[in-house]
Length: 281
Ligand code: CMP
Image (cartoon, rainbow, N blue to C red; front, side):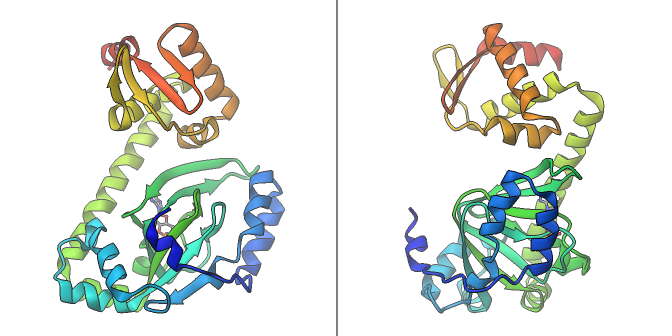
């Protein structure tokens, strides 16, 4: 466990999201009910400096790409303005349609950006990790939150209020440019997903997801690229807009054809699979 997490001893003593609780209860699926138990995340928010030494916060901010170029003094100033928050796996951090006044930076852990369909089906827009940020859109355009953000793992977050965020952007155009670059990257990815949804069948979407994972995380071994920590079938389904059963069928089919080897959380993506993907491109 990262050292930072030991600094957080958070008492969750209230549920500030009463409206959200009701909205989520209406969905009634198992995952949502699990999230409800953990909803009171704002009860765990603390002003910078309460728990973490300021110097730790500066070091954390330095690891976030959008702040990486800032002078030490500016980071010190920013560190004084951030909130610290520890959230448990399953907690809803940001809820779609709620007003939002904070930008969040992930110090450690993992979150997913999700939309829910009417039946409670989950569409995963993105998975974000330590060093990433989220929640920048509402403070910038003053519209309600565009999506839900849910902790996948126990996570440590730093939050920055709208006023401090905007003042910082005005004073430091390099942060504004870095945020624009990241938002452009996210829009490109969204364009690709929309194109894939419209143009590719489900098997091709599963195959692309596996190929992308292999290219990003795969280690070359005998026979192909080894993905050591694959997402769950439910997560893959959420990423490509289909059901877990369909993903399972596609993965089993690729395995039967000798293109993949699955064992626990690992997938061996055989060279033959990658060649086929190249030929199809
Ligand atoms: P905001 O709308 O304030 O709250 C929800 C956040 O989810 C949003 O800001 C972004 O930070 C993030 N988000 C929304 N859509 C996407 C996307 N397509 N890819 C990555 N992150 C997103």
